[in-house]
Amino acid sequence: MDLFDIVFYCFALIAVGSAVVVVFSRNIMYAAFALLFAFFGIAGLYVLLQADFLAVTQILIYIGGILVLMLFGVMLTNRVVDVDIKTGTLQIVPAAILAAVVGGSLSGVFYSTWSTVSGTPSDVATTTPAIGEMLMTSYILPFEIASIILLVALIGAAMIARRKT
Amino acid sequence: MLTEFGRVLIFFIIGAVFVAGGLVTAWLIRPNRPYPSKLTTYECGEVPIGDTRVRFNIRFYVIALIFLIFDVEVVFLFPWALVYSQLGWFAFVEMVIFIVILFVGYAYVWRKGDLDWDRPAPKIPTFEKGVGVREDHLLEEQVVGS
Image (cartoon, each protein chain N blue to C red):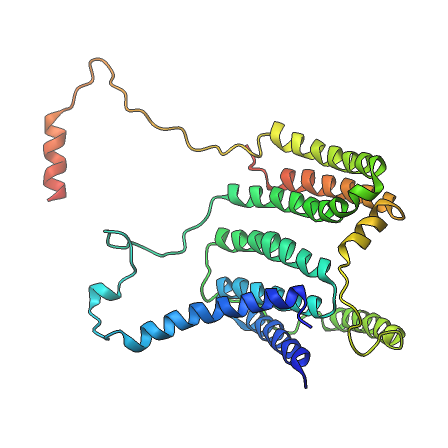
C-alpha cells in the first residue's frame, strides 16, 4: 500500500461518506453541503485517474455552478430542517430495471477496457491540449452543436424561471 | 514523483491543517466561562431575531441559472486557448461562431430583462392638501396600545 493507494482511499472515503450523508440527512441544507464534499471527492478520483481536465471541470461546473444552484434552490424552499423526505421503496420494478441497465453497461465498459489499462499510471501528461485539438479538428460539429444546446438551455431556463407578470 | 496535482493536494492538506490547528489550539488554551448573552448568535450590536435561514429571492436562482450556462462555455474556452496558437485562424473562426451563438442567448436574457435586479419601488410619503391628522384618532390608538 503506497502513497497513491492511501490518497485514493481518502478520496473514496470522502466521496462515499458524503454521499451517505446526502441520502440520510434530515436537514436538506446539510445534505447540500455534503454534496459539495462528494463532488470534491469525485474530482480527487478524476485526478488520480489522470483525467485532469475532467477534474477541473468537475470543480468548476459541479461545485462552482450546479451546487450553487442547488443551494439557492434549497434556500428558496420554506422548510429546511426536518423535512419529511420520502425514502420508502416506491416503483420497485422500474428502479430494478434502470439499476440493472446502468450497472450492466458500467460493468460492460469496465470489463471491455480492463485488459488495456496498465496497472500503474504511466506518464504524467496533461490532457487539455489534446482535448482542444480534437474539439477544433475532428469534432467541430459536436462542438458547435454544444453551443446551440447551451443556447436552448439558456433560453428555456430563463423562460421557465422568469417571474410571471 | 510529485505531480502538479500532488502540489495542489499538499496545499489542500496545509489549508485543512491550518484551520483545524487554529481551532484546536484555541479550544485547548481558551478559558471556558459561558454566560447566556455570550452564547447567543453573534449579530453586530443587535439582538438576533427569528431564524437564520431566510427565504431567498427567486432572482438569485435565475442569475445562477444564467451563470451556469456561461460557466460551461468557459470550460470549452480553456482547451481552445491552449491549442489556439497552433491552429490559428480556423480555430479562431470556430470559437467566434461558438460565442456568437451563445451571445444570442445573452442578448435574449438581457433584452427580456432577466438580468435586471428589480427592487421594489421606494414608497415616498406624500401629503395631501386638506387631510390633517385627527387627534382623537391618535388618542384612541394610544389607549388601545397601552
